[in-house]
Amino acid sequence: MARVIPIAAAPRPAAAAPLEFRVSPPLSLYIHIPWCVQKCPYCDFNSHEAGGEIPEAAYLDALIADVQTALPLVWGRPVVSVFFGGGTPSLLSPAGLDRLLAALRALLPLQPDAEITLEANPGTVEAGRFAGFRSAGINRVSLGIQSFSDTHLQALGRIHGGAEARAAAELAARHFPTFNLDLMYGLPSQTQEQALTDIETALAFAPPHLSCYQLTLEPNTRFAARPPADLPAGDACADMQEAIEARLGEAGYANYETSAFARHSHACRHNLNYWHFGDYLGIGAGAHSKLTLHDRVLRQMRWKHPAAYLKNAAAGMPLQEESEVGGADLPFEFLMNALRLAEGFPPGLFEARTARPIAAVLAELRAAQADGLLVVEPQRIAPTLRGRRFLNVLLQRFLADDSSG
Image 1: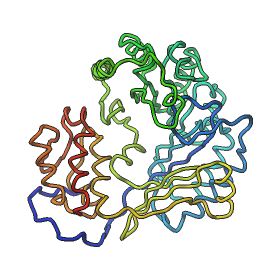
Image 2: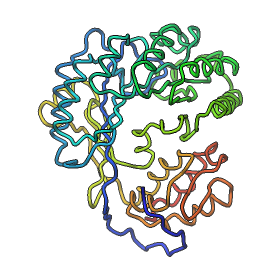
Image 3: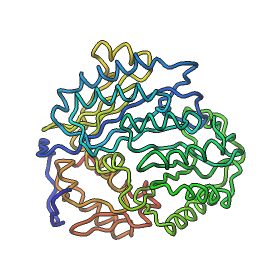
Image 4: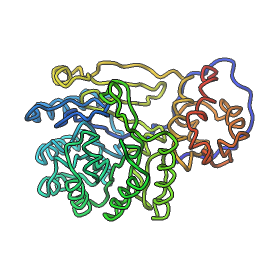
């Protein structure tokens, strides 16, 4: 992906040089669907209870108008992946998805082999809809299973039960060439044995990809305001994590990213572009973009509330906020993403994405290597197992000097 350059010490520049990006990073498209049937108590995403039928036609019009407004910033750049996130994107009709994807192909050079993912809630899908989604062009589905246990699903406030989770997983395996199952551990009253039972149930469907992450109490959620009284202790959750990683390793899954596991060639290409600090155009209510121009990196956020987004996108003003990422901030932002990957990154990718030489962070890299947190080689910089376990500690090494350019 990037040229290999030798890692050699060099003096730090006295002041940050102007940014100059010679090659545009790969571009992904993220599409946010903000409605859910019911808001989960642990969710801090921009999601809103639908309270009936969603305004599908108006929202699709707004999304298309949003892309048209964004075209000058991404003109001619091929789109390598598309991801429908939410909310619950499977609330959209197959016909609506087909209409939207046709419009996107007319506006953007979508690569013929682009990965096109749809997040789906097991409580909102059935065979006919999955067949329709596949016909519309979706080639990967990500199911928010969370657990196959009725007891734990009820504790999480999910609208589906274990039987629906199993049925949805079976449908995904039948209709899509690749799919992901989302699972959580560290659930109220959950034991390690129960967490591994969820893993075994998931493995029975032979998913090409699994996401396994610990339940966390995010700010501004119902769980944060009223935490469950019976959450497993931190040590118990760490034991669950290690047991899950070991079992999935035995089953042939590579733990290629902090909470992502995949069989060979089934890593999520859309998420890999994020971790490689690629570009993404985000459309839809509250969606975020990161776009690299020849001399700067832009961050954008669309209007967050669905009603405000519908109104402003239709008027050609979908952006609520836009700012530039300072050149001094780019090294840390790159490392915050790239060091989530088990394989790390080639040194040349750092320069390609930040317009700064790897020597700008060499002292920190060497110090982290000395402490057993990093592997620093001419062709690869990667976190060790210890570095992955203590990723926040590792990243703090680079935050301290992020103003030095």
